[in-house]
Structures are given as structure tokens and as C-alpha cells.
Length: 385
Ligand SMILES: Cc1ncc(COP(=O)(O)O)c(C=O)c1O
Image (tube, rainbow, N blue to C red; front, side):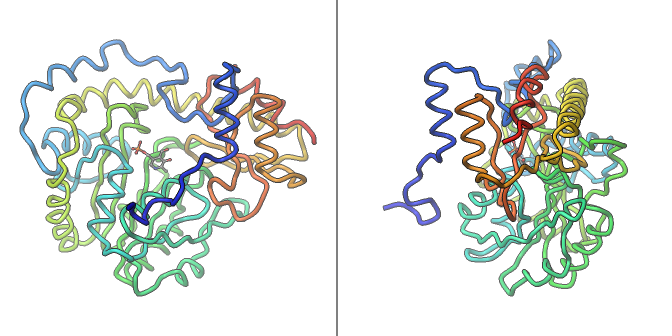
């Protein structure tokens, strides 16, 4: 009766089940998987949401989004050193929806998208739900997480339609370097593939300025899509507004925009209220972005100091984003280790295998939690076996 795009028997994993039991008993958890910015004690400006009410009265559907909202997104991107005209921007309700729209735009059922590994676990579902196949390409940890261009090229088949990159990547925190961007763009050009760049965390470099990180839009691929959204850029996931910024060669862009218009018009999923309020959300949200940037740097610093006192563990270098990876001895499996941390010490972290790391043992922590929670978890994370 059900689609084969869904798992046969969706069952909760052991970690989810253990967590459920502890929560049912009201046990306080030191949650280092919290990635929801609205739950980590940030101050949101008092009047931030006022405009939403005023802008909710009328309805003037526009497939790619209201012109004023697309202009506001273009102005925001300019502050991040990305130059893209409003007529090259399509609004979506989330980055996840942006992926779904792009898969519809680029792929027939059974076509392939090259997806980095380790990376964001939702790609498995996002590709399957749209009837496309995510073909993994490995990021290798050679001091930093890097793409092996030869292996990436070997993953291309006659069914490949796009290369997906996440910069900085979740959870490895690695930005695509200028050289990698050139190599990926050349490969895309050689095989007439689109380049999809998930840049939702781009404005959170661990050090230095954002302008130093190249956007996928400047890489020279024939057709490029850069994804971003309010959920990460100003810590407002509840607003449900994201965007696709389109770059590449003029003819390819024009064809893509016309087709995107049709796909987006079929759903018209972005609320009028948020489109009317987005200019103010960017302006007021700057203060939220600032707090998040400070929080992740502060927690990364605490993590690195904790790691320095625990030579049996290794905090891998983080270039940007909201997460960090700790390599721990593979004396027990990742699953045993995270279950032990949770059930004995009430510390919740994600095991590396959730993100398809190439081997064990890695623990993934969010850098968003409130400092008292984060710091209380560290001695357990770094405790010797
Ligand atoms: C790499 C990456 N892309 C996209 C998203 C989802 O963003 P949105 O809330 O806009 O769907 C996330 C969420 O954590 C993410 O880690």
C-alpha cells in the first residue's frame, strides 16, 4: 500500500529509545545535540516579530516570492559578499524544500546526485523522497576534510545530474576551499552537471571574515544553486523562509528560472507574512546572528581546552558552522559509547555513524548549547575509558 521511497518499518534507534525513557522519567539531559537556536537562551529583539501581523492581511501570490522579499534577500547576500540579482532568487519554505524543488528541476526518477559523506543525514531522505539516488563521495580527513577530485570524478555516471556540496559542511565544519571549488566547478562543466551548494552555515566561520570564503556562485560551473535561509543566517527556523540563489551561464540561468517558476507556482508554499517581514527580520536578526557566532566560538574554545587535557581524544579542526567532531578511542563501538554517555551520565551526543563517517569512533557535538550545559558535559565526554 505504501511507497517504496519510505522505509518498510520505521523504527526508532537505540539512542532515541533510551532518550525517550529518560525524558519520560523527567531526567535532565546535558544535550549536546541541540541545534535549535530558539532553545538555547538567546535574546531575540523585543519587536522582531511585529511586522508579521501587519504583513498578513492581503494575499498576492508570486511563484518565486514577493519581489520586495527577493530584493531583501539579495541585499542580505550582498552583506555576505555574494552578488546576486533579485531576479535570480527563488524563495522556499526551508532549505529542505529547496532541495526537493531542485531535484524536481534537475532529475528524472532514478537520476543521481553526488552527495558528500560524512554529511547531513537528511540527504538520504531528501533524495529518496524525490525518487532520486544520492551517490556518496567521500570527504577525507587529511588534517582538514577534503574532497578527492579523482574519486569525485569516478562517481559521475550517465545518470548524474548534480554535485552537491555543503560549505561549511555539517558536521565536519569544513569549507570548500578555492581550489576545491575550481575542481568541482570544472568537473560540473565537463559533464554538464549542476552544482548545488548548501551555504546555510557560511556566515559562521570559526575564525576570520566570511568574505574570505568563496561562495559556490563564483566557481564557474555552468549552473549553480546556492542555498541559504533564515533558520541559520539569523537563527529563525520557525519563520520558514529560505532561498535558492541561481548563478552560472546566462542561458542556463534563464532556462532554470523559468522552470523553477513552474515548480514553485505549483506549491506557493512561502507564507505572505514572512515575506512581508523579511527585511526587518534580517535587520533585527543581526543581533541574533552575533550571539550565535559568539556562542559557537565560545563553546568550540571550551571543547578545544577540554580536548587539550585529554590526549586520548582529539577535537578535529573546525573551520565553520555549528558543530564539532571529537575523535575518541575505538575501544568500544560508537553506539555503546553514546548509549553509555546517555544512560550513565545523561550526556547526549551523536555518534559519527549517524553522519556516515568512514570509520569509528567519532562523536558529534552541537556548539549551540548554553555554556553551563556544554561545560558540564565536557568532563564526561573526555573521561578516560
Ligand atoms: C547542512 C544543512 N542544510 C540544511 C539544513 C536545514 O535548514 P532548513 O531549516 O532551512 O531546512 C540543515 C539543518 O540543520 C543543515 O545542517
